[in-house]
Amino acid sequence: MKTEAKYSRRAILKRLGIGAGFLPLLSTDWSRSRAASAGGFPLRFIGITWTDGICPPDFYPTGAAGALPATLPFSLTPLAAWSSKLLLMRSASKQQSPIDLNVMIDLGAPYGGHFTYPALFTGGVSSPNGTDEVPTVSATTPSIDQIISDNLASTAGISNAQLNVGCRPYSTSTSWRSGGIKNTSQTDPYKLFTSLFGMTDMTATQLGALHARRKSVLDFVGGELTNFSTNLGTDDKAKVQSHLDSIRALEAQLQSSTSSTAVCTAPTITPTGLNFNTITNYPNHVKFMSDLVAAAVICGKSRAVTMDLIDNGGGNSLTFPWLNIPSPDFHAIAHQGSTNYDQKSQIDQWFYQQCVAEVVGKLAAATEGNGTVLDNTVILVANDMNEGAGHYVGSIPYVLIGGGGGFLKTGRMVTFPKQVPNNYLLTTILHAMGMTDVTGVGDPKYAGNIDAQLTT
Image (cartoon, rainbow, N blue to C red; front, top):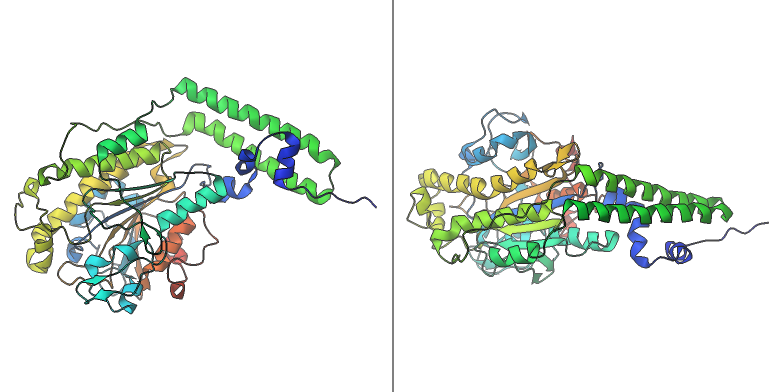
């Protein structure tokens, strides 16, 4: 009886005379689910945060769940052109968010809004010190941008997929490498521009030549694998055929990328020499960082981004003279609550215009196959409390933008009959990124997801 030999991917590569660097090319997980949309394009995540809550009447749509109204609430009007790409979430019975930071509440800090950054994208925090009003907490688990980046490195061999930026984050961050270790944001747009685009990008001719070289290598590998499989048994032939199917899928991706991939253009970061420690330059700071984040994603220089627009201490000293709001500062305005929703809503709308709409517009304008880069991205906009006067973390106003390669059903508002842990939302985002085997994020007590509500 003939004995069937068993061959690993590394053994096959050795037989073909090529290195282990080609292992990702022979991984069906990478090419089909882990890192790409159904159309073969990369999946991306962008998290955007600022502090001091929102004004509920100017933020949440009224009415029943379903299609978004023709006119968005005041704070979200900068996103009107992309209403079909929005996914808003609201409590079914109240005009508020359905998402709780349960880990903060369970640890005795239900009103610790200014100190919830470690929980927003991690779902796991340490026991707080101090008082309910001013607790000090640390993440106990990595944030989802780190999880996505680590997954790309391990399954696809993609390094440097992560990018953390900020405008006035100071020592705070929503991005955590692991428990107790936060990632530091890059805050200088000039230095960031140099690190991202300092080297001259390839011309279209050079890029085409690179694709041709890669395709020729794939053709060679495919031919050698076909010859190699002729003497194998049934089981091993099936494995080789699976690898051949992966190679054909990669060839199709390379073919589509020469004609359907978004055009990479470095943003214009001028004027130069601005001092970003001054309030008057804050609008330029936010716009520069937004343009760099969008370009980094479109150009394939990053796949998992966090952008913290302000420190989680509340924006002390930050005023908005360009909105004719020279005083008091942002923190003080938020603390006035409903008595000063007028100024607070103007500021919220400005953040959505200057940053979120800036990123969304550029991604939506970048064609990718039959869609856009935005269609293959999930943007999660978050705040560290529900409303500035209360600091309550039981109703965090998250906004989702982009389809995640078709995973999310957008253009609507979803209501929930009861509050759900933000852990569920974070898990669903990882599922949208192709990590469907993830059962929970952060505190294991809150394992679960809201896939059914956000995808159907």
